[in-house]
Length: 518
Image (cartoon, rainbow, N blue to C red; front, top):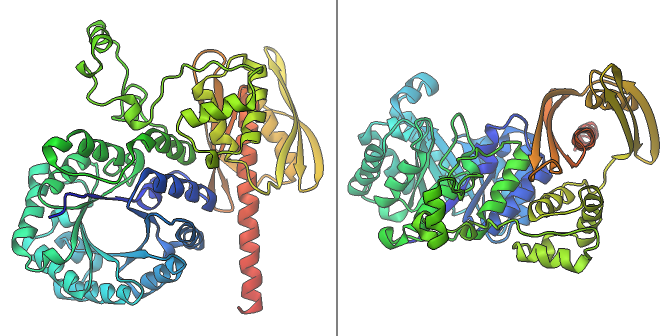
């Protein structure tokens, strides 16, 4: 049996299902490219049949990703499988992942079919998927609560039909490690053709056991783990990719298993996903939390100073965390900025030096000293600018204070026309948002969530505002970064506006195609 464990990332599918607002194509592609750089073997890019937007995202990712296999999810239905095949055909190599429920409660209460009918549906789904690709994965939904005899029958039938990977999900996070590992062991002992497929696992974290269950399965012979960055996913989330990857790396001498994950990319990928998905990482989260490599106890601090491995079983550098010891000022030149970004692990192709340097100078003028964490934040937000922004902030002035009615004046470039409006509000951010509403000439955009976060340390830290806005029945994320909270909030809303404008353009194109009868 191979000692290589494949890492199947489902951040863009299962992970996105748990987000307060859907990601756009551009955001999904950024995450996919980061996952490719991380060394993920398979990227589940989405559920193509679910919406035109998801179809477009899967197709775009399939076209751009070259070093990982791009996968689309489908139910055991012809239309789902065909949508996957159509979206993914632009890739040199791709996978179709089809599934059907197998537990008694799902078969009886949800599908309302007999076990024989469900087996036949699974077989036909795998065979149809094989028309498009020879890389077909089949999942037994709710396998953790499925009768073992029926599960063995289903796995054998799926492999006979042509499935090259069979996934055993603990869909509701119900099993314990001993129990789940036992299911995998049983399959290897009882399914006669099991050597013809890779056994995968997809564990949910409802009881906090997703990583433990995945590890138990791997120890019993599973050679693919399905996971998400930061453990994102339905309900309590999925197996955390960074945790299972670092377990296999840190305990390799005992487990004898390897992955293709480049662990130095973990921290950066985690931050990217957290920012784009508007899902903060808890401070005490293993591997990527802010406290993961912090030591408060005097005894611990003394031990680490004498020998790092007294209290650290892995180094911060092994997951891409660097100490923030850089001190740059407005007198620093482009060469220094480029050198430091490359020291932090970024390649020259990862950033546009001019746009980063322009943002750096503005920040350095405002706060004096710029540190590594500032530089990474600037890099991230320089990448978030729309290639063809329809809305652009040209001027902002806001006033507020005790016994003063907050007001704001905002000038926006709308297409090629600059529009200026002034408004009042219950605070400077609200006033600025009201002025933007007047610029738009409508109030169709409703802010449903507004979060403020500090990026950096001390009073001069950068302010990051994340907003979720509703527009025409859809939700959009927006993120803004500045030393000023009002400016950061305005930038976040403008980011939303550009996304809604893009969505309107796509909808209009679809209407024109429909009218033309194409």
